[in-house]
Length: 174
Image 1 (cartoon, rainbow, N blue to C red):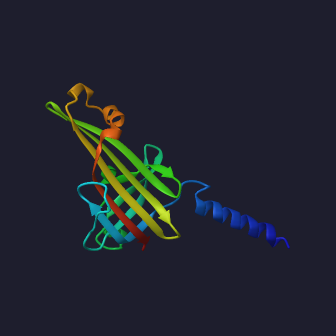
Image 2: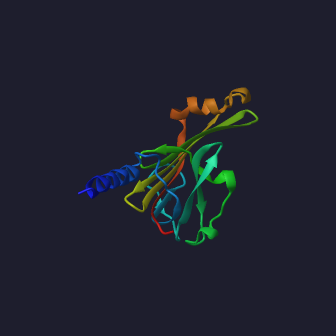
Image 3: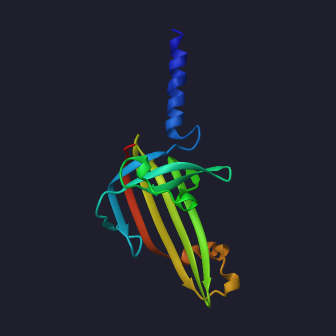
């Protein structure tokens, strides 16, 4: 009966790993979306996107911290994915069953200031499923150039309007 403790330990470690208790979940892989919608004018339910959506989530070390790149792919082969380096990074914070990111930016142009907030999430669904969402918020403001900062975008977050959203429900294929 010495196998019972070993079996129990294997079950506990397996459950903790699957539940993210032993660390953030590993979302690495190539995924193909069965549902892909996009709302180019807000955060509504969106319209179906034509064509096949394939993407890869690849872990990357960003200044000593793990993050995930989101790369669009032409096929399910990892070599077909478009890597834009740091521009591909979309998920930087571990969350329950997935990864998220909140990015605030401000861009000044003359007497105008564009405040932006981007929210990204990738959440596991079952063993090989994934729900990926992107939302973009924006506000055009007359804040002077000296006050057009990332902190201004954070401070104004409740005033920003959702200008686009995208949803993908996908399954790992590679």
